[in-house]
Amino acid sequence: MGPVRTRFAPSPTGYLHIGGVRTALFNWLFTRRHGGQFILRIDDTDAERNKAEALQPILDGFRWLGIDWDEGPGVEGPHGPYFQSQRQHLYDQAARKLVASWHAYPCVLTADELRVEREAAEKAKRPYIHRGPRRDATAESNLSLLAERRLPIRLKVPDGSVIALDDLIRGHVEWKADDLGDPVILRADGRALYNFATVVDDAAMRISHVVRAAEHLSNTPLQLVAYAAIGSPTPAFAHVPVVNEPNSKKKLSKRDMTKFLTTEIRQKLERIGWSAAEIAARDDLNPATVAFYREMGYLPAALINYLGRLGWSMDDHSEIIPLQTMVAHFGLERVNSSPASFDPDKLYWVAGEYMKEMPLADKVAGCLPFLQRAGVLPAEPSAEQSRKLEQVIIASGDRIKLFSDILQYGTPLLSPAVAYDEKAVAKRLRKEGVADLLAAFAGEIEKLPVFDVQSIEGALQALSSARGTQPSLLIHGLRVACTGVEVGPGVYDIMVILGRDESLRRIRSSPAFS
RNA sequence: GCCCCCAUCGUCUAGAGGCCUAGGACAUAGCCCUCUCAAGGCUAAGACAGGGGUUCGAAUCCCCUUGGGGGUACCA
Image 1 (cartoon, rainbow, N blue to C red):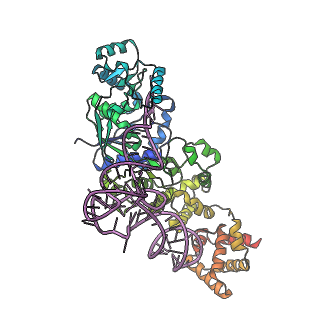
Image 2: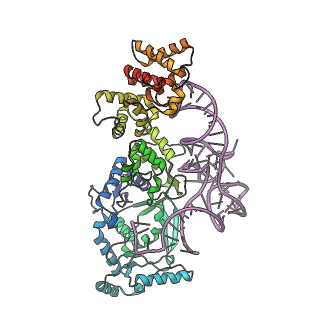
């Protein structure tokens, strides 16, 4: 076998779809495992919806995830160009050669005539298998007809044969050629159809393994006919199962992604500082795109790990699999043949596992932009602010699973104003004796020689036992007084981060006294 | 309609005839730890779609049914 060469052929739609990137990842893992080349080929033949700027988000997404390509946009190689719109002449040439070699023929039927044929077949309850009138005409006469008129070209499907495929994931599949109509491979205007362009390109680019979504399995027999016609060896095929919507047996669709922008998701975005207008201005901000996870502060390694395990397993127990391990063990034979549902909960868990392993400095760097975009910290934080942020992150520990989680835990400590939560205040501050305790405790900490976790805790325990109250009464009251909310890092950590003066200010101006 | 694919806990999966009273993970519930929330520990509940074969023996092989999905285009 020659070198492993795979490809992924996205069309520039303006966003990187989660299902597509999973397929790309399988290609990439397989390729890296075998030391081959992974090619990114841009399927931009559909001129109107393919603007140049619509490619950028896709490339950005791949780069963010660390999926690199050996040939493609920005990486010239021996088999370019890598934009299908620049390869039209190749399809045209190939199709004409097929007419000359009697493997293809011009279609002289009009759209209306074709429709009539199809309807007649339907009425007779017979499957419609197209065979055109010029199918058996001589190559010479077809060629001269083509010289006079621009006509669509159809590929001849050989009569009576069986087309077989040994799919690397699905095993042996076969089709009867007689069930297949002669497909148009080139439109009258010279633009190629997908089933033909993909074969011409895959052959020209020496693709050894076509790893693609299972929805393409039905296209494969026609493509196999095309390979035979152009006289190229066929690559190996592996059809990976589609990714389904969460809790559903429906494919995670590229179309109608707006439905994934539920009110819940919208709230999540708003909570991390996105305005309704900003969300509306981005049509890729929904859970079906890679960009969404990036904006939510997921670690790219976590997304990769999750996606890699979706439909593939390394063994009977591994869940957190570092990229290098994945590359070392990836194999198409362990890719499942049944569809898999995307599970946001599990992805969130994986994200948390990866965040636990993040070095502190990287965590700080990752969290900062979220605080800045929400206006909690300025573009150029002061040394004091940076120091505090680091302390907050240390104190928050495993609570931060996504970078955006810093907003929940960091905002109450980093912004000067405290937003008091009604329920928390009612439950923890407006309680018999809490105001007295807080006032007394404020007096105690004022006198502390050092203001650290040990001394604050000591003061609190001392006061509680002197008063004969549960320490938790004061602890909960303090947290709400200092942060406005009930959940968060340990209270002593909170007070140390705020500092003595700010802690006192917050305690004394808290709603416990109003 | 016709062709093709798929089918293990809610979800991701292990399982390639006996190791299966079906294992793990996420999610769920309970308990423990504890200053809340996370994290962690322990426990619970939870699946071979149905029916026929083959076999001493089937989640695993075959057939049928059912259910899901894809294709059937001058879409990709």
